[in-house]
Every structure is written in structure tokens, then in C-alpha cells.
Image (cartoon, rainbow, N blue to C red):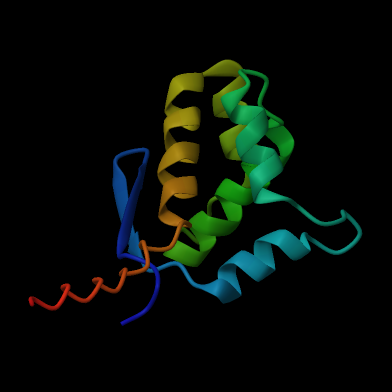
Length: 117
């Protein structure tokens, strides 16, 4: 069993099922050639602050959508939606994606029961 849960993300009425991986996280955080690295935590912090870094958020969303099988999805499509369409839908998609990239909690070992006298 991997450390990530099965995930589903929906865009424009189509649902994409995928299982995130560390390879996907590394790909995202390495960024694209000539554009520099991307910090998922920084993108999340900007989204939580109410002032999202939309270009980077759109890049991450696009990378995950491609990974999930949405071959024709582009940064520009999601950026256009964020700026001129349903901003709430883009932010909701971001939170779905960010949540899916978090591993399942590690199982904690139960403490041994104290021995009786």
C-alpha cells in the first residue's frame, strides 16, 4: 500500500481518478524548464491568505490534471476561468488537488498495556 490515497478531481463535468506519487510531487516542485522551482507549501499559503499566486497555482493544477489524464488541460484554461469565470471553482479544485497530494497519516503503534501486579 502506498502513502497516498486514491483521489478524484472534477473539472468541467469530467472526473479524473488518480493516485498521487512522490514522483509527481518532485516533478511539480522542480518546476518547468526555465521557470524555476515551485513550492507547494508557498502556493497553499498564498491561497489560504486570500491572495493566491494564480500563475503558479494554475501551473500546479495543470500538472496534476495532466497526471490524472486530462491531456488537453492547460494553465491558460484554468487561469482564464480564475480571472473571468468561476474563481470559486478554481480555488475549490486547488484545495481538492492540494489535499490529494498529502499522504495518509502514519499509523501510530499502540503503547503496550501496563503489566498487572
